[in-house]
Amino acid sequence: MTVRDLSINLPRQRRVLSVLVFAAVLIWIDTTILGIALERIADPRTGLGATPGQLQWAVGSYALLFATALFAAGALGDRYGHRTILILGLLDFGAASVWAAWAGDATGLILARGLMGLGGAMMMPTSMAIIGATFPPERRAGAIAAWSASSGVGVALGPLLGGVLVDHFWWGSVFLVNLPVVALALAGIAWAVPNPKLAQRRRPDPIGLLLSTAGLASLAYGLIEAGQDADWARVRVWGPVLLGLALLALFTVFEWRAPEPSFDPRLFRSGRFSAGNLALAALFFAITGQMFYGNFYLQGARGLSALATGLAFLPGALGVAIGSGLGARLARRFGVGLVSGGGLLVVAAAFLANLAFDVDTPLVWFCVVGLVGGTAMGMAIAPTVAAVIAVLPLDRMGAGSAVNNTVRQVGSVLGIALLGTVLTTTYRDRIAPALAGLPPAARDAAAPSAEHTRAVADALHRPDLAERANDAFVAAMHTTAAAAALVAFLGAVLLLLAFRARHDHGAHARAEQRPGAAASSDDPAPIGNAVT
Image (cartoon, rainbow, N blue to C red):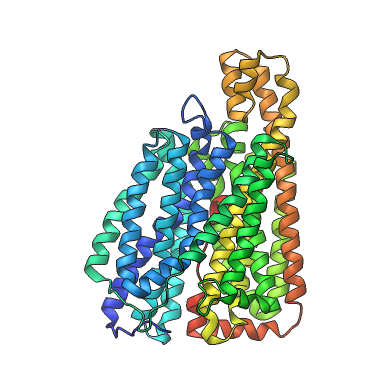
């Protein structure tokens, strides 16, 4: 099934691409900008006093809805027109941004972030479909590459914009930056963008959407709840985990038997497709969880301003951009296994380097590790995505690209849930002795997070308690970084084993030669704010 060719002339093709690139920047800015505000949102004095679990949901709800709604958005675009769904996605994103900016509590913020993820899911596949219908095969790869470059712009801009806004306004202002982008993008779409539909429409998959969303949400809930209770024996922890796994298994069976599945599990019969996607999921699992503690380390334990934090993350974002192009070139010469697998090994080493960070470590080392780790991430991601798509038949590349995007987002959801829980439980174990002598009310108020402990220390005029909070957080960060390194290492082993043969050069070359493959495999993902 293909989208009808619209035969648009070259000047209008350029206008369409410019509008779609501008709109896509919105997705990537929002995936990085929230991290800068997390410290303020967690602080009961300057924000919502959100607990670590609530912050995990504020980050994870975006990725959750983004992951599970991608297929439904594409099918709706086929049926009602991709421009129509793109416009609805932008409107949803704008409205949810206003809600998030003035959310009165953590629950409102979580719900608003979920709606923003839904809007992002409606924007990505529709933009790709419009590009596919607008550009002829010989120009499509270049258009996709330009659209993909928007991720680098958004990843770099997010922390910097967030730092300026948080330092000069309140934490909710980081969401209001979306509104002018939405308004200009809507105007541009009305002016230049066509409304392609599939000649043969796909069937909606409401059962698949319900099972995948409920299953992933239940699994994430159980993992996050473990961090709040610190007791895996409780039914409120293992119950949702088992329910989530059962629903995801049922979703897989349902999609396997469906004549036109939205998520095709049959693709995983290819060993290289499975290994590459699992390795990418492992990478995004690790870096999303690392993003969660990186912002708290810089702003909380080290006391940096929001803008200084954004600048500290910038080398990592630049490294991803550098590594993407470098990895593609090296993979053509040395093979995907050596380049991407080696890149993931360097990523694991960069996570382990976090174990040397303390509250007084020179910031330049943080930036150096970020640059090295970011470059390795780019080198791992770009060749792997191209290679896993290239192993599929031409008529399955579109479905493979959709699966690839979803698996990476699922990795992000589980990363923030599980590694965030590791961070929370380890901190509570470390800080417990320091809180033992406090009155019960103060002890309960200080226990949830380092931000809560510092607030109680400030109220009690106990600078020693604030120092203990910083030390306990750094120790928890080290444990979390080690867990992230282990997961990245396992992903590297998968790549090295699956792509160890020399003939993977040909697969990578075919990915670049086929217009369909280029259009399918270059979808970027939110990564820059997770690099330290």
